[in-house]
Image (tube, rainbow, N blue to C red):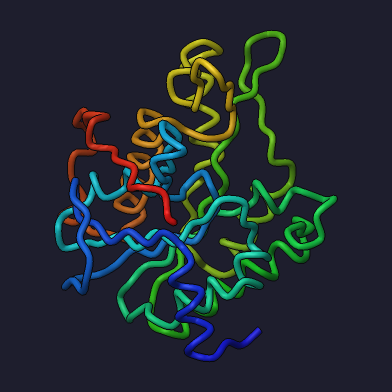
Length: 264
């Protein structure tokens, strides 16, 4: 699928972009590299009408130095396929520069077999679409990074955290090995974290409120915890230098999370 410059610009304007340094949001051009986030609701910027729901992409800047910006293109409900079909990948590729990084996290909505606009099969179409992100970033001198999907909050009768993403994480891991792409295994890391926190403890990381019991989306503490894993992983895999990250062992106040007014 090829877009004109006008179509790519329109797609870019339709997502809640956030360019941010650590702990502050800024509009306009910045020096240094940019981390672009392509993903779904677990990573996306939320608006005030969705609070306290928070995507981990919102908290990622808290762990980065001022020289590293975050452009969060993640959008609720998107799969690796629908993100491409709507022109959102093209919008990123129209502006990404050599030295930038493209973080790619999908699977939650790829799993929806009854929706042909979003469904992909793990070992065929899912991998095919992920390759578009990898190839597109590399063609522009940027570095792609694959992130297995963060786990939902689900426990068995024995109180053990259980995986929910089927073959998608394994398919992404295999693709990363084949293509020589850095992989952040958020599925395995988040599952281990949920196991450590337990049935009750995990409620403090997910969007559980007086009126909602959401076992997929995060609240501010959960988003901060996942963003910490992402930043640490980028440094560990040398996608970012150690000097590019900070606060990996520090407590991040939840008051740093903000939700902009809902788009009209």
